[in-house]
Amino acid sequence: MAALTLRAALLFIVNLTVGLTLDTILGDRVQFPETEHCSERGAKLQHTLTDESSQTVAHLEDVWKPAYGYEDRMSPNESVILNRSTINDQGLYSVTCGSAVKLIQLNVIISSEKSVTEGEAAGFTFHYFTAGKLERYRVERNKQLVFELDLSSGNTSQGSGFENRTSVAPHWRSDGDLTLTLHGVKPEDRGDYIFHVFKDNKREHVQAVRMRVSPAPNTEDRNPEQITFTPQPPCKEKTALICVSVAAVLLIAVAFYCGQKNPRICGSKVSGGAAAGGAAAGGAAAGGAGTELEMPPYTDTPVPILHK
Ligand SMILES: *[C@@H]1O[C@H](CO)[C@@H](O)[C@H](O)[C@H]1NC(C)=O
Ligand SMILES: *[C@@H]1O[C@H](CO)[C@@H](O)[C@H](O)[C@H]1NC(C)=O
Ligand SMILES: *[C@@H]1O[C@H](CO)[C@@H](O)[C@H](O)[C@H]1NC(C)=O
Ligand SMILES: *[C@@H]1O[C@H](CO)[C@@H](O)[C@H](O)[C@H]1NC(C)=O
Image (cartoon, rainbow, N blue to C red; front, side, top):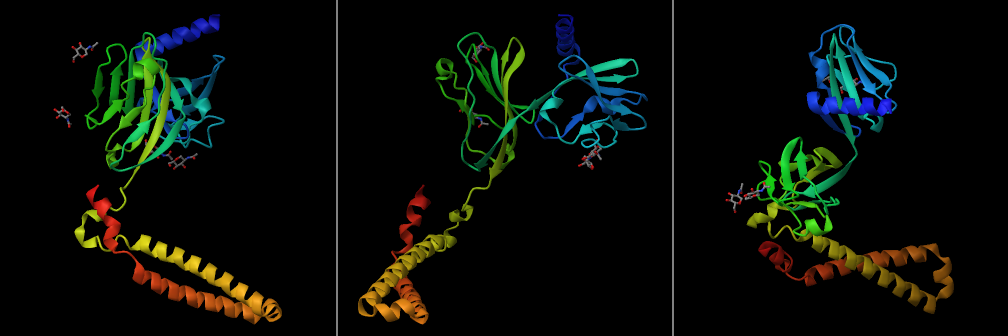
């Protein structure tokens, strides 16, 4: 009871006075900025664990030094940096610097990864119980606003650079589907997207997606000079396929003919098999040349691509 009250009091203080909340994606580096401004020897960074006990993370001598258990993730430095965050790092931290105590809330968020091709639309799945009184649904990228939806009025706002490119399905209110669509993805859209809902002024259901943007394929298609060259790979593939088929048919034919005419010689002689293989390969080469001549004109393939 006392512990609960203390925790509630601490969280209240965090919300009221410090308000410093750090988000990190699981496995990423975490820097505690407050530690950089402290030069009091004996200063400490402590992590408050779930049982309200605290564990020292680092202390300041001439530089910040890791405490026991943190040496493999932290090097002595001007500020405290954990090279890799784990899920157990989340929670409340206090920086005791002389007589001043600053509180920091660290959220370690498990993210999913997404790779999107430039120019395409990205869909970020997010569902939440929207039947009831809620405040806002907010999406940020690298801490900047991407999209915000006022869940009571339905008003939306979009961050700079994301104007007219974000949307949620119109039926979000009835089915809670707050999946965000980002249209026309650009290379600069890459980064960490954080999704959450505000309820009673607290963030709920925090989710993260790390998005990578890959370049659009065949950007050179727009160059008319190269139109005649682009269809070549599919044609070669076709030829190869036909070659393999022809070779298979020839092999079967040779084997069949052989088996019918001369089962003993064909069955026992290794050289016979090799010869048959050679013949098949020759046939395949001829077949390949033949099919190449019969190939439909190149323009068959590129026309739909050019017009779409
Ligand atoms: C932490 O990361 C820094 C910078 O990448 C590196 O120089 C340092 O050796 C790392 N320290 C530990 C303990 O892994
Ligand atoms: C020391 O901190 C700086 C930033 O404050 C960082 O760039 C550097 O990688 C850190 N070095 C180590 C060894 O962690
Ligand atoms: C929603 O937007 C409309 C028009 O822009 C505005 O009049 C209204 O006050 C907004 N409502 C809220 C709750 O922000
Ligand atoms: C977004 O759309 C509105 C209305 O169609 C338009 O006035 C505005 O210029 C657009 N903004 C951007 C950044 O494209």
